Image (tube, rainbow, N blue to C red; front, side, top):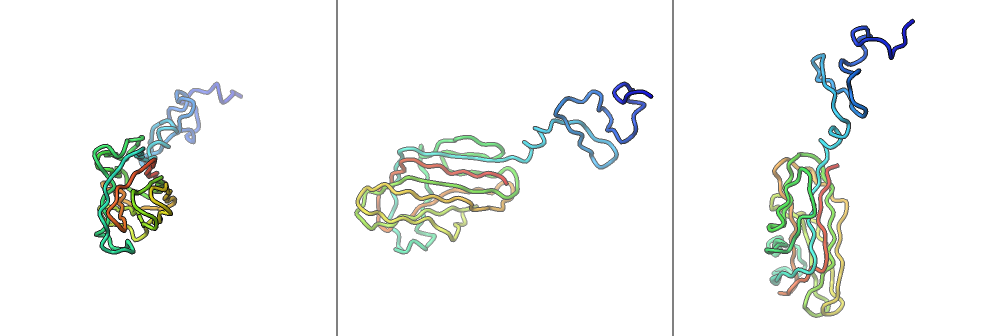
Length: 197
């Protein structure tokens, strides 16, 4: 009886995918549903579903106008958190990053995990409220991250983790800010990212 390793491919049982003798270590056979298929690397299959995008900021400022609604519940009070050099592209795969506009545009549909954190201060007095919201295609989310200053210029942290977005290709996410008084907002450090689940 011959060893399986010594059999020619033409002698193999049909259960073996064609081309197995010349396949590369780490490749997998992907059937196309029509009785054939192709060998491809497992890494390329795993990469095909991945998508992420990230922007960061360090020591940037933006002037935030006074909100009409002191509870910061009115979407019209929010401005887009962007300026010419506020954000830096920190990397992406299948997400288009526009650091100038402060936007992340999804190239692939699916569920994405949105995360953000910002160390910030305002040049106001104590008990000033500042809030951050996210938007998808300029529709602001009902949830907000709100913080209150304890004293003028104190550095606060606002963070969000675990917001899941179900998006279609081409949709755009960005961050917005509102304040109970007209103030200069300093972003000491921050990060805003999305990761496809």
